[in-house]
Length: 212
Image (cartoon, rainbow, N blue to C red; front, side, top):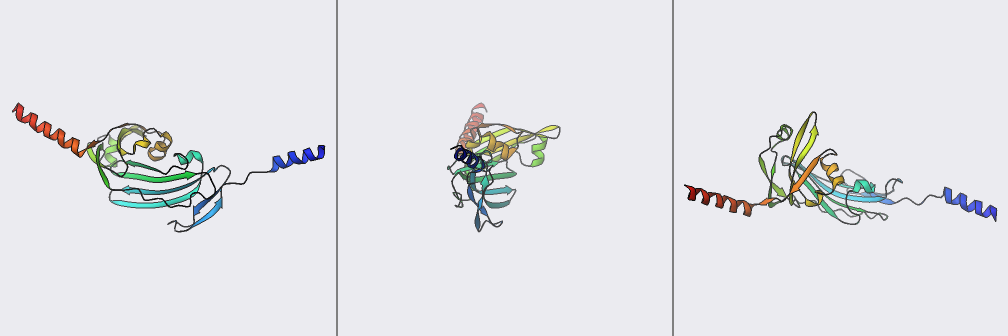
């Protein structure tokens, strides 16, 4: 009896649970994937399609991999689109994290780059951001439905952060840190639309006529 108990305890101590299996891109274009055993620290599978835009240059990538829950930054099994747009640069991701074997097989849609009629203040260049002299207006794109403003450390000064973002980033500190840097501090506010801007312009012109 004691020998059996010892054997059971030994098996329990030596036995390791089977690791999660996830799809991983086999090439840079992710045209093919392989199923791999994830390390013990990876408890989720991730698939993400991303768009990076700098000036007029736009590139898209697809990533499928093992991931920790911390690096996912989005709820499990919920396809989520995140986007942050600083005017001179934009980063958008469609992402899905899940926790069953090979659940990240699908390739998600490319985030939209089409303008959506909303506008926010922004910096026209990185130099303006670093100097804190930002006075540009930015047309939001895709799922960007909130304005943001704040600062991030840059050497001995604070660079300005202004632009459009998807509202789901406003309270997702982990995703904010991933996209804007861990030391960024921002607040969100409602964007303005072309219709609202036109109404304000009309009001201003009318007021001027009355005063004149």
